[in-house]
Each structure stands twice: as structure tokens, then as C-alpha cells.
Amino acid sequence: MTRNRRRTTTLKDVAEAAGVSSATVSSILNGSRSNTRVSPETRERVASIAKDLGYRPNAIARALVQRSTNIVGFYFGYGHLEPHDPFHAEVLTGLQNGCGETQRDLIIHYSFYRRGLDEVYRELVGGKIDGLIALAAPSDPLIRRLIDARLPVVAMTDAIQGMPSVIADDAHGSRLIANHLHEKGHQAIFYRTCPGESDSAGRRYAAFEARAEELGMKVYPATTTDWKGSLGEAELDLMRRRRELGITAAVCWGDPSANALLSHCIKEGVSIPGELAIAGFNGIEPPVEPARRLTTVRASWSRVAQRAVELLVEVIEGRAVELRTVLPTEFQPGDTT
Image (cartoon, rainbow, N blue to C red; front, side, top):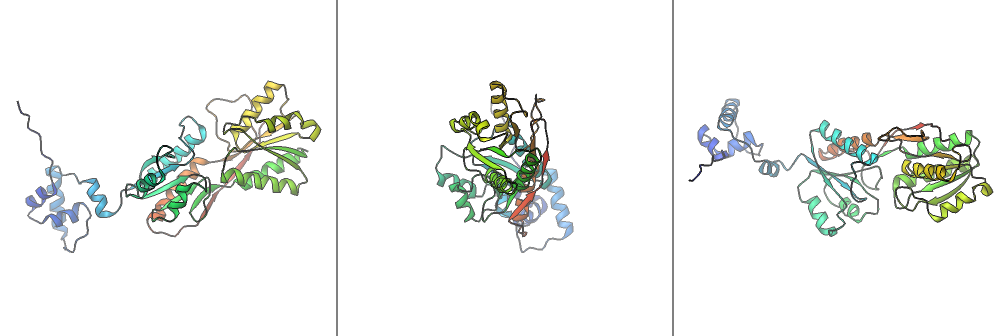
């Protein structure tokens, strides 16, 4: 037994029912460009007939005509987003809020580690999206190519030269940490830097080091072995020699690194903050109540992401924007310093 399938109403069906051309209907319903002048009465009649017939505009065709998809992309150049990671969760929340405010949809692109650069580039500039939010290292080869493309791109968290960027005031936050530790009487600081390229982490260290020098404090930098803050041999050596070097405080480029150091100290019987004060950066609320309240700097990454979307829409619409948008950070003292 053959089943009758209901045929989808086409633009031509509406034109025939209204007694006008298909071009006129397309101009009224899909927003296509036409030199035909259409009276308000005709517009109202065509819209009413289209509704009665159940006509639904073809989204792909409309996007081609309007040269817009109302979709923005997000490119994360550091691997895969982990929704349970507090930082990633804040970024996704901000992107969602920004898209909601600007009435855009969102496509998330990862670092495409199994695909070639040319293929990724073609996908991003191929017309699927109107613009892109990028969270990636400045040296990311894809980013360099996108700067030369016509696709509107806005960077977030890590500033990229030649591209509008929305960042947190990492430098101000780091200076506040240095001031706090100096007021507490600390003179020698162990600074834990991140294990890879990061514009934001680099700005934090540079600002802290400069302010520490102004305050007469000595800084001993060492790099964590991974992004979670595991201690490497050079760091363990500094921890063993901290009394000899006069180190009484540690500053970490991010809260995960600070929490990892705190766990290490608890395991080794190092009193916090009696023997070693610890400060982090980011200030993201943990999913459960922590045993210790970390001294840190609060950067609202959800707001950074939301502002990046808003700025991208301004670029897409042809409005002039600043190359650097800096959102404030806030020092949050805890019981670890």
C-alpha cells in the first residue's frame, strides 16, 4: 500500500495563489533584493496566503540571499572543551548569554588535531558562520591565516595582535597580588608559570615580576609540568630549598596550579600560610565547598566571552571597534596567605 506524502509548499505555490511573480514573493518573505516595488497591501496579502498554505522559507536559500546565517563560531585552540572544567564552563555560559542577547546561534569548533590546516580553514571561511570567536595562542597557525581572511574574528582571553580582543585585566590583578604579599612581609616569591604558550598567563607573570622588583621582592620562577599544576623537578627543588632561599610565598598562574601546590603542601606537612603563603588567579567558584579559601584574583570569564560575542556582532555589522577591550579583575583574599 502506497502512502501519500504531503508535499512541502513552495515559494512558487504562494506566488500562483497570490497572482504575483516568484521574485515578488521572494522579496517579501525571504528578504531578497528586487527592483520590483511592492505595495503594503500586496505584502500583507502574500504574507497571509503564505501563512495559510504553511509556507516555510528555506533557511539555506535565505542565508545565501542575505549573505548572513546569524550563526557565529567559537574556535578553541587548546584541545577539547571540558564542560566539567570550571573555566570552560564559564566560557560556554558567557558564549550562550552573548548569543542570546544578540539573537545568534553558536557552532563550536575544536583544535582539529586530526585534520589538516587547509581543511579547517576552508570550513571556517566557507560561509557556514558569519564570524568567529577565537580562544587560542597567538602563534596558532590557523589564527595567522584568519587575520588575512575576510571573516570577522574576535579573540578572547588571549589577545592576538591585529585582531579585536577581549581580555581580563590580568596585569592589574597580578600587581594586586604582589602588593598583598609585600604588605604581609614576604620578600622571596616562588612563581609557578604555565607549561605552554598563553598570552594571559604571560601578562600575569610579567606584571607580577615588574611590581615585585619595584617592591624589592625576589622572584623565583619555575614551570608546572602540565596544565593541572603538577610539580616538576625544578619546582620540587625550589620547595626543598625554600628556607635556604628565603621563599615564604608562592604565586600560581591559575587556581588549578595553586590548588595542586596546596595539596602537595598538605601531603608534605607544610603549614599554609604559616610556612608558605599561596595565591592563585581566576577566582572561579569550585563545584563543591573547598576545605581552604584560596587567595586569588577574580576574572569573570563568562563576561569576557559574552562581551566577545557582542563585539563580534558589531564587527559583522560593520561598526568600528577598539582592538583591545579590557574587563576588570578583583582581588579576593583568602586564608592561604
